[in-house]
Image (cartoon, rainbow, N blue to C red; front, top):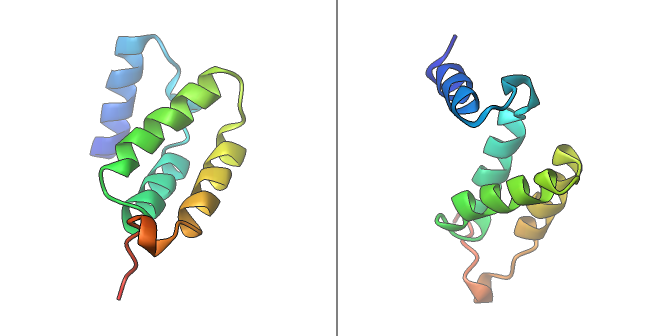
Length: 84
């Protein structure tokens, strides 16, 4: 087990959730996209928004893909960070 696995298991136990329901790679990929293409503090906020949407019935993978696509098109003039 990794530290991430241990953390997710412990956090899920604290919240009464099933760790199998946590798409860790999906959330990490989304956070990376937002941090690199929009702004770093947007990553945890976007992860929270993903959680709210999923809690309301949205599909995690589909919702994360939509948000990643949005981050990928975020205009530099609105603060988007582009590797350069």
